[in-house]
Amino acid sequence: MGREELCAKIGEVMGAYFGDEMQVCEPYGNGHINDTFLVVRDKRYILQRMNHQIFTNPKGMMDNILGVTEHIRNKTREKGGDVERCSLTVVPTLDGKDFFCDSIGSYWRLYDFVEGTITRESVENPMDFYTCAKAFGEFQQQLSDYDASTLFPTIENFHNTPWRYGNLMTAVERDVCGRAKTVEKEIKFAMDRSEFVKVLENEREAGILPLRVTHNDTKLNNILFDAESGLPVCVIDLDTVMPGYSVNDFGDSIRFGANTAAEDETDLSKVSLDMNLFELYAKGFIEGCEGRLTDRELELLPEGAIMMTLECGLRFLTDYLEGDVYFKVHREGHNLDRCRNQFALVADMERKLPEMRAVIERLK
Ligand code: ADP
Ligand code: GN1
Ligand code: MG
Image (cartoon, rainbow, N blue to C red; front, side, top):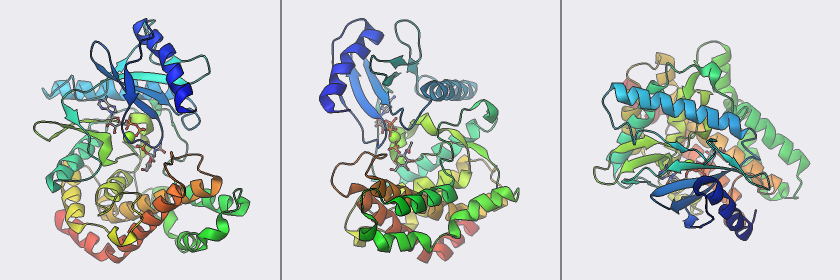
């Protein structure tokens, strides 16, 4: 939907939440999937148009979020923590619904703005990465007794890397935009790793790697930090909370936060794995998980980092071949730039695998 069309709809959405069509809002954040707006009324709110092409069951997704946020609030209450800011708070419509469907079938939700917080797009102070790791580890712990069978799978096969690899192969075969011949090097890079993509799935099938309730999108910008103390306050972007692997939650954070360059940096000489940040994150994550990770999970943390980076690269390349239909792009070739960046990071991680393993060995 174009910007103007979107803004026209916001009036209708305001009506559902506030009873008038006053539009006091502006685009907010850097997400690749939903449309996010800051709304200023009696106080501040975050309004999101959910991407229902991707999240095809908005009700299932909102039920997950309501359940998970209540669970986290209860855990925080038990520990005497900051109940008001520890998790997202869904604001109901005037007629008491958890989300709003507008006249053209777009789905919207409103959250309280978690005040006194900031988001970070990159690691400025290494200690922030350590505390972020503790927060994501703790998040997993808080949900360790959550009944996973009540969670709706918002995106099937979300972190099933062999399935993502299969999607890439199909996209190459179909080549709907005629772009495949321009990315032969990238396709080969992926195909050279056709065995590696199965490593975690094989471990699960063999009953070694446990499924846990995980976040599945553990980017640094999905944590809100207290503006004054700098400490994590709240884990956000709960759309993909589903059963998954702890090593993938670990890996996705490394992919995004321990890259010495931004995810879409085109100068690939700037892309590498920062081993200092890797170690800090590993320390924080292991501590946050409070000893509950099995030995095998600990051993596989480096593989999780490579897997999430490779998978993300596969997804960016697939989207490039399919005509940029999934991730928001802000320039021509954006998905290809992102793919090349992720593959460069995979190559560096592969070189540093022995070092990563040595770090985990020291910490466990
Ligand atoms: P996306 O799924 O598109 O990444 P997010 O839910 O992560 O969307 O939101 C995008 C950005 O909006 C976040 O990175 C954060 O900066 C901000 N944000 C989201 N929810 C809140 C909230 N409740 N309070 C304050 N900031 C928020
Ligand atoms: C998307 O929504 P956002 O920007 O936090 C994507 C993640 C990718 C990430 C890459 C639902 O996350 O899986 O790792 O982009 N989310 C979805 O930056 O596909
Ligand atoms: Mg996000």
